[in-house]
Picture 1 (cartoon, rainbow, N blue to C red):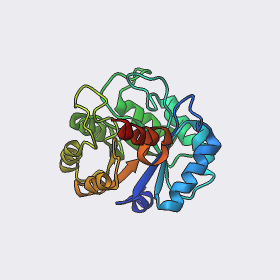
Picture 2 (tube, one colour):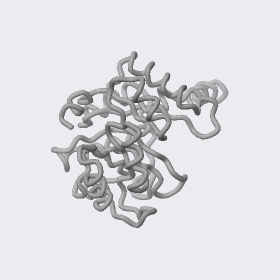
Picture 3 (cartoon, rainbow, N blue to C red):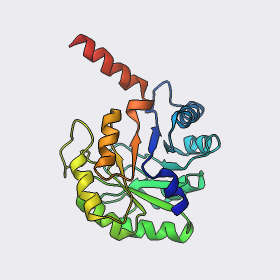
Picture 4 (cartoon, one colour):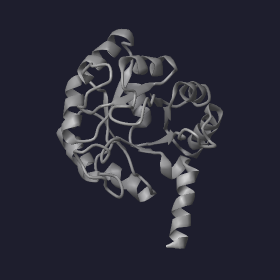
Length: 226
């Protein structure tokens, strides 16, 4: 794990994901997107879905944070032990899973999930996607290796901010100085990414602003019509 962290420390991680039904929703396309991101300076890739993870890990020589979205509400980011094991078996360096305190579909707690993964994949690294300080504290107690602010503003505990939730990031890094905290969520500009580092982020994940041309086009189109 320490070697992987050394590669990611204070660096950019690019999330390469496309939503169902979109033209870019294809593992080959996401692998090409990941390659382009690495050429541009990405030190890591975040990928969704087993096929995408497999394709991407075969094309890039950087750590891959893998997840499997199942469903659209509640706990759906790598929601069960079965999903997490499959993500690791697909080649992910780190598995990202829902790190909130909400009920999980398989009835296990986050701590039980982490324990089960340690038993089947003892060298695995686990990232907990959290939405609040209490989530992060519970995830740390559960044994997560990394904490992400991924779900800030997507659960009832915190309002959605226009950009990254830097206040939450600061709270978590202050409370958990020994655990790498990954800034993720609504990081739309280079200034946002830099501000996240200054707020204590170990590394920064950017997705939409780099790899989602539909949204990027919409930003420009909206600015020209309002």
